[in-house]
Structures are given as structure tokens and as C-alpha cells.
Amino acid sequence: SQQGEEDPQALSIQEGENATMNCSYKTSINNLQWYRQNSGRGLVHLILIRSNEREKHSGRLRVTLDTSKKNSSLLITASRAADTASYFCAMTQGAQKLVFGQGTRLTINP
Amino acid sequence: DTAVSQTPKYLVTQMGNDKSIKCEQNLGHDTMYWYKQDSKKFLKIMFSYNNKELIINETVPNRFSPKSPDKAHLNLHINSLELGDSAVYFCASSQGFRGSGTGELFFGEGSRLTVL
Image (cartoon, rainbow over all chains, first blue to last red; front, top):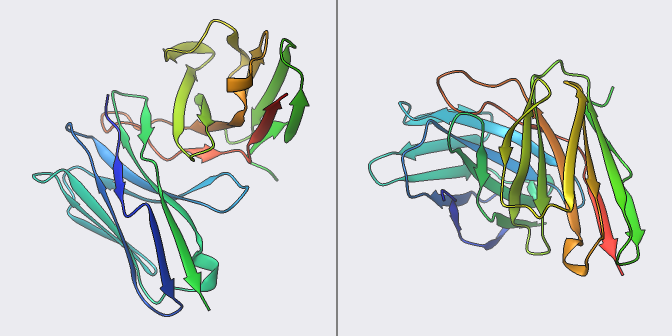
């Protein structure tokens, strides 16, 4: 079944640096989404990118999608301590099923 | 106002017991989900309901039974709890995204189940 594979599994950077996370998948998708999960909390939606889009921005977030390589990346620019969280990519499988990757654990050091 | 609320937040119980987790959404969404997150943070879909109708039923043991009395509520009942059921269970809802797969999911805060 479709499941995203995220890379790296863990990332630790200094505040102010940029963080890049990658997500690869195996079969065709309708859209791909990114979510954030703070420790002990639920997931929060960040960005949705459709299969016919290549790049999308939201504030300090930039998402790219390369359907030929079956890969997406999430870039967080000028990171802050509050960005410390786990980040998940998710992709649709069928009409109503969203399948998640295993996540990247991001730590921003002050 | 909490968009997706689930109760209880924590649940500690003995093996063999039966327990329920309740979920309610006030977003007017048509679709609701149950996800299980294990200790390695892997999120796996369990069930999905659309307008009270079951549309996704993954390979989940029969001990797990969802129930949707109306489109704003989706409860999860678990019979004969086992140690391996220990996890965080998340309820979510979405409006759907016709022709383009699943839209944005709104998640509850999770219910941490510990089976002793």
C-alpha cells in the first residue's frame, strides 16, 4: 500500500537555519499534504499540494512536488524553537484515504 | 471552540477489559476517521465513515468496532483489550475533496490508551 517514506527520520539544527525534509512515495497520488505534530498533541495541517502543482508557499514554509521522481520536500526557513515538532507527509490513496509517512522529528536548538 | 474533541484523553486499563473512546466534530464535515499511532509515531488508518456510512475498514481485529450515530460523532469501542492495543488513538474529520483525493484532515488531541 502507499506509504510515504520520510528522510531524515530526525533532524537537529540551530535556530535561524533552514530545515529540509523529504518524502518519497511509490504510486500515483491526487495530492500530498504535510502535517505537524507537537509532542503529546494532535496533527495540524500545514500545506496541501495537488499533483499538478510543483511548488507551494505558506509563510516560512515551502513545499515542492516532483511527481516524476515521486518525491516532495518541505522547507522551513529561518527556523524557530517553536518549530520543534514531528513533521509528516501524507498522500491520498483512493478517494477518502490519507496515508501517512513515519515522520521526521525536527529539533531546533536555541 | 474545539473543532474535533475526543474523550478520554488518557485511558489505563487491564487486559481483557472493554473500553470506548468518543469523538465529536463541530466543523460540519461529512467524513470522520480513526487513526492509531504506535510508539514509533507511525500513523495507521483504521476506519473512515462518510455520513454515518462505513467506507474504510482496514485490517483491524474484530475487537475494534466503530459506531457513528450521526455525522458529527464517531466512537470507537474495543473489546477484550490486549497489550498490543496500547497506542494513541486519533479521531479526525474532513470535508472531502471531490476528484482530488482527500482534503485537509482536522485531528483531535488523541486518546492515549495503556493496557496493563
